[in-house]
Length: 507
Image 1 (tube, rainbow, N blue to C red):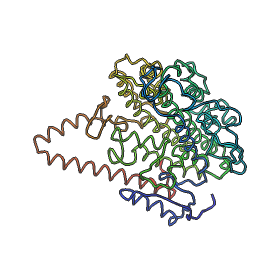
Image 2: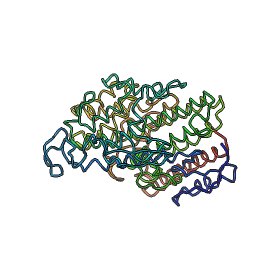
Image 3: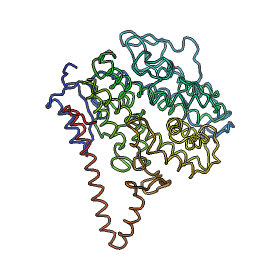
Image 4: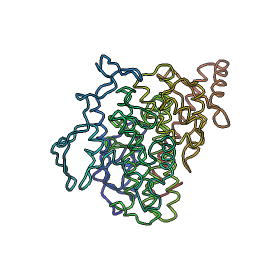
């Protein structure tokens, strides 16, 4: 791509551990790489994907129109204090749809939108879009999932044949959903209160439906489409047509990051505290606080987001060169990224398996449904037994199974779950233990053990040594170990980003 000036960069940096990284990024012009676009939480796009990233504002508008929670139990349609009458239905004053003609009308010309009037209804914003503009149309979250059977027709690898998406398609077809439009069909049923597959949204409770919508839109609509954008970039590499997506070189790759991170991360450097984000990047940071898998334990950027940013930056450099020898390594990175994106889905599934094991409220059951639905196809690939146990809980709403046994089945899949080059990247350590607060483990991992995972045995040994040698000495050793690990992780991220700036792209 033609060089840019860096006059347009706007970044919000946290002053703690990220100063060296931020300095490296801001100083890119000194080593021959210039930029004019705002960073997505530490990723420097080389093309303008700001309009694409505003799809997260549609999610804000959709969620704001879903009304308050009813605080109802699962499958209890009786009225509650918050929702008098029927607590399973969206009522007119909360969300009426479908919108009548004339209530959601607009035109778009040259990236400018004229409302007559604006779409205000959640269902219509999902269907027609609102904030993410194309030159003569709007981009919509529903559009990510619709027409899935023919997306990318004629490409080296079509949408439906992408390894991740084909696994999802095969699983949901087996569960009596449409092989290609399952993501759209799930969300439509959640909005309308109808049946999809084995689940009847008419009876589960409004709050279940609300959780299914606000999370499912990201996990079942946005996530597959972000995967597709990476595949699109790999396709362009194989076709040696690096201007296939309107702008030179890395447009599709940048779009994948835009849909992963969202516009609310724009202008933030690596490691920054970001308020208001709501897409997949945000999910990693939110879940790490429950599993002590943030870079600072319960605070800071999620370790998985740290890894994903490094991989996205590596992939960008391969994509911008785009030689035939770069295509297979680029595809490997796409497989690693897609696999690591499953980490917060697994963490969310574990969290809400725990919170629904004894008592089932509509809210927590809805959250379990959304997280579980994101990982079920990949679980089924490596352990049909683990997938079926989770499916019974999340879709059949049958919580009679043994929680500990079902949880152990899920944990047994970590080393093999994922796709291609991503297999083996997910470990017990990357998922962690579930905490209710920083001092209370409420559901410890049961899959620890083996060569590099003997952390539970190590903890017992450390405890014995601490008793014998003195608590202060033990604390000093532990502090040194954590400091070294923290320094090493920060250094590796720094080296990854510097490597991509210098054009050295390890695979």
